[in-house]
Length: 197
Length: 199
Image: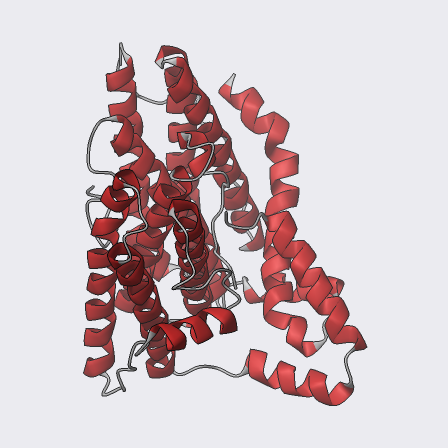
């Protein structure tokens, strides 16, 4: 089911993610009078790391991030049936955003010259039995992702790749805020998102 | 709400189109501006100036008496968090011997800056929660956009991490502000999978 969800939307997500990168390139380059086509080409060039070693490191970082996102996707898919209706609707929205993150990461891996690995057959998610446990699980997975992004974004080599991954981090931080709210916790407890909230 | 990638693409396309029909001199000028590398102290100065504007807006809104108790409860901690961002950025700026920019000295100055940044609504003319939240929401999105742009060029690891931490926190503010707007549902507060703010 998870594989189907990712697989079915993967092409669309890739197209969108690719278009997103082109959009960034266009935004940065429109002052140069570039056409959309040349902006897209330049976006690809500017997100290509300078050296093969840097590219390998980027691919390793992005692949690990993809694995974390896929695990979170699995948790949303498994957990949504246990949530009450309003929360389930929100979680469905978050699931679709996590799928978009996997698409973005697959696209970035490809841009770096790599190939995304296959999904795992299953992910160890524990055995949550009610809504509170599901939200706690989702919260822990989202914060784990944030922690990883904060550690790894500075190690990515081209600036546009760092910025692109940061657009994923921001949404995961928003998810954490909403999950904390659902748990009755302070939604934005710190001025600096650290992955410990 | 943050723009979708489609909206950004459309905007970029429109901008590109405009650039293509602009006179060559204008192209050269805007091109030079877009491509010129910005030194770190200047980048920090821009971010501090924007954070000071955002803080000014929060403080003005919180002291204006136009907020409902719910909105006030939500927004009150955010002003302190913006202050913390400013302190952190100023510390980085001082370490580099850079200049600390002043914040807006008056509502008029703040409104001029908001207009310059194409933020709708003006301080002093807000009539309630919705007006205030919309202004703050757009200003937060402009701030997120500034960090997104900065991340394209910053190359010092601790500065990149700091920019990410603050950008993500502004995105959390964005979500909580969106929750104060109709329909006020959690899902609608986080409507996009990728958030890069307004540039």
